[in-house]
Image 1: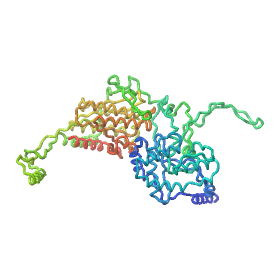
Image 2: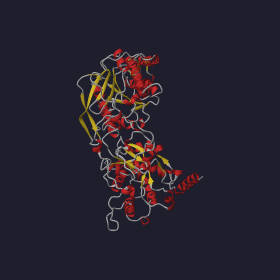
Image 3: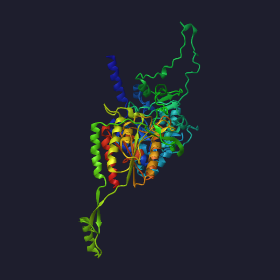
Image 4: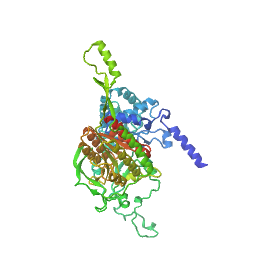
Length: 616
C-alpha cells in the first residue's frame, strides 16, 4: 500500500511540476527527413547524421514544485558533435506547434553554419548571423522564436553569484548586445550547463573538444565487427580520463582498531567483466558524462582470434603484385595518396557449384527476360524515307507547311533499325563478416548474395553486354582484398559459377578503396554507358579509424570520383537503416533498399534492366 501511494504521489507531483506543452509537441521522427534536407541545403556535412539527444544537466532557477518533484535539472537540448547533430527527441517548449516545428528547422540551419571554437556564446552568435544571411526567409520566424525564448528566460535577479552573471551574459547575447563585464568583472566563458536551456542555440563543447589525434590511433589487436545496438540510440557526452586502478593499489586509510581480520589482497578488476548484468544502459542514462579510460586492450582481442589473415598455403591465389590506392581524410580535407594496399585474389580450385532447382527456375525466367532485350529492333521517327507513315511527324509537317510552305521532301516516315546498346557493368559485392548473419530463418546473408550473383551472371550472359563481378573485404588499410569472380574478358561458364558458389564471409568493409578499384576497372572500358553496381548489407567500417564519419566521408568521395569519371554508381542494400546514410553517399535516387532479403535477386535484375533501357 505504501509503495502504491508513493507511486501515485510521484506521478502527481511530477505532472504538477511539468512545464512542457504536450499538446503542441513535435517529435524528431516526424521532422527527420525535413531536417536532413534543411541541414544539407544549408551546407552541412553530408556524413553528419541527425540523431536524438540524451538529457544532460542544466542550470537555471527552479520553482518549489520542481524542487519537490526533483525535476528541472536535466533537459535534452541540441548539440553539435563531430559525427552527429543531436536534437531533442521531442520539442514541446512553446504552446504553438508551429513554433516548435520552426525551432527544429532553425537548429538544423544553425548547425550547418556553426564553427566551434570553444566559446559557446560567440559560436552561436556568429552562426546565427551566417544562417540568417543564407536564409533571409527565416528572419521572421527567428524573430518570433527569439521573443519566445526571451520570455522563457529566468530573471537574473532570481539567481546568485556565477549563475546570475552567466544568465545575464546569455540574455545580452540573445538581445544582440556586445559582451560587457558584469559588476565590473569579466564573466569568462559560459558553459551550457550553467544556465537554463537555451533552446535557440546548440551546445558546441563536444565538437570543439574533439581530439582527432586519439582517433588516429589504431588498435593493436584485431577484433570482430561491432554490431549496432538498437537499445538506445541517444547521443551522450564522453570524456577521456586516466586509468587510476594501478596507482597505489595497497594504500588505504583506516583506523587500526577497526580491523578484525586480515586477508590476502587479490587484484581483481571487476569493472572489466565481459558479462553484461543488464544495468549498464540504465547506469549510462543516469550519468551526465561517460568517463572512458583506455586500458590498452579490447574485449575483441581476447575473444576473436579467428580474423587473422590465412596463411599463403590456405589463402586464395593472388593476381599480380597488388596496387596502392588513395583515401580521403575528411579531418585534414585532403586525399592521402598510396594510403591503402589492395590485392586481387582468385579462388584456386573452387568446388563445383550446383544451384538448387528453385534458383535455376528463377535464373531461367530472368534470362528469358534479358534475351528479349538483346539486340532488339527499334524504330527511327521523322525520316525522309521509311516503311511506315509517322503520324506525329505528318501533323507537325502539315502545321508548319500551312504557315510557311516548303518544297523539299517532308520527313514524315519511320523505319525499323536494329538497336545496339553500349553498356558495361561491374557488380561489386560486399563479402564482409556481417554477411555471416542470418537474413531469414533458413539462409544467411552470404547465401542470398550468392544466389543474386548467380542469377545476375545467368541473366547478363543472355543480354550480351560485357560485365565483371568482384567481391571485397578488408582488414585495415594494408589488406584490402578484392575477390575476382568474373572478369570482363572472361566468358560466363562453369569456372565463374564455381567461384560464385565458393564465396564466403570475409572481414570488414573498406568501401571507398573497393569503389576506387572498380572505378579504375570501368574507366578502361570503351562503352558509352558504364554501370557500377554495389551490393552491400551495411555501412563502411574497419578495425582502424575507418568507422563512423571517416568511412562515410571516404566512401562519398569515392562515389563522387566515380561520377566525375563518367560512371553510373548505384547501391543495392538490405540494411534497414540505409536511409540514414546512403542518401548522403549515393543521392536520393542512387540506391535501392531491399526490405526482404529473399527479393534481392529480382531487385538486382530489375535495376539492371532499367539501366539497360536507358543505354539502348
